[in-house]
Length: 581
Image 1 (cartoon, helix red, strand yellow):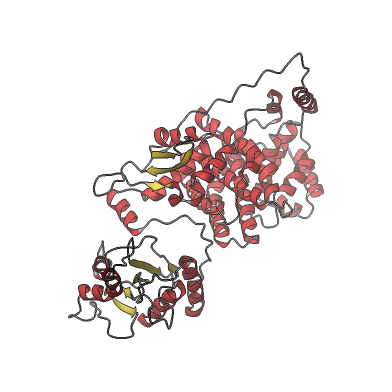
Image 2 (cartoon, rainbow, N blue to C red; image 1 turned 120 degrees about the vertical axis):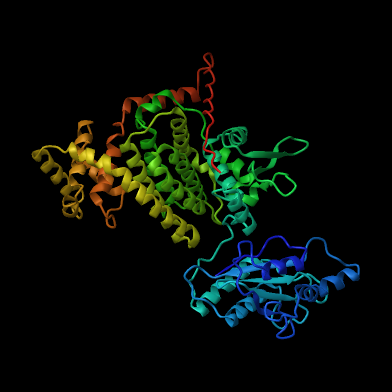
């Protein structure tokens, strides 16, 4: 059961009643009538009494408001409070009496009309559909004061959780007030009229998240939004310093009745897109490359580097003993940015599924835990490399994509577990849905790489040697893995890694440590893709590492007579981005 208190108070009681008792914008309203009111009897119901009028009902509701105005104490702003309450899909249909009880409990919980308070606000509840009601109240009490409704949204949610248990309805997750606001009905109807795939609110939210994943500076962010993604942006600055104070965005085709742009402030789109939080994320982007020899020990493809970063930075940050929830939350945000960029790397047939996964995971990036974005500087280097790959025109190989998606699924499973341990129910559910979306794409992406590995399976003698390595490395899973249909692909991956100089037994141990196999549906597939990834990692070059240490020490304490020249800045990657609306 979902209560949705409208944030802005209205100013026209008669107008809202006309909508509630009218046919609806698409003739969807059926049999509108009262199911509850501030009085047990005597309130006119235009849906049941042919002599009752909407004007008469509006006048009765507005009596305290008009009295207040007549006394010269009119309050600024609107006076019409509105809260639809809807059951979840699949719930049984409630009776009018049950809906009346729901309305009474909600106005009591929110402070609009506490039980027994004869000076409370006047209210009604109108039902014009099977699955929801509309509660309407005038926001002035009988004695002229405003209702005590601080925290009304959360209290309405809490009351609906109780009602779900009592009425036998689907138990929805308690919110933590961090979710992005859903589009209003008017926004959805406007999108439908114009043939837009999304409301302006949803579209702008996605474009800003996409730009954030690609940009490294405030100037780059706003430039990418305007020239690359087609978003109108207005930046507000402090008068004296000229520093950025905030920003708002507009979808170019979205105008009001007067033809003026409809603007959304960043914080209205999502709390994590407010300028203070965005500036923290941009400030956490990595510095230029630290040393030329560092790249020698990096994977040969950015998608393998992405899988490495999950192992090296994300997994430790989400571990039980990490002890820094702020850093963990920030790594989830940074990982989502990488996934946003990864969507552009995959073939078109996988892109839709990955975009759905990316949208679902967005909910898991925001919780009551404040993200400490500076902790993600190392992980964000991987995102920058993915951005360069996206703008270079290079097409990643199928094997690299399969490895990246397998690592992504494992990462999201860890994110789900992290949120579950902290009782972040909505975020855990979002991560769970993300895994479902990813698994379909990953299964499709892995088919051809696994077939290729199987075709390069070693001769029987070598394969038997790999079977002995398997039994020694993961004895508890060896029998099940050897019987897996993808055992030939795993043997092919081991052979490929061995040719690169890796120890197959050591790789099996490492892969089994980093990927949980107990619940894996296809353990050989998990290991094959994992070993293909590990096998592409360069064997550590200890001489290069020593050279970096010596050079770093030299630059940290250079001789006075030979100062080290400054390093050149890393160029900003080319702009670009999808625009569909």
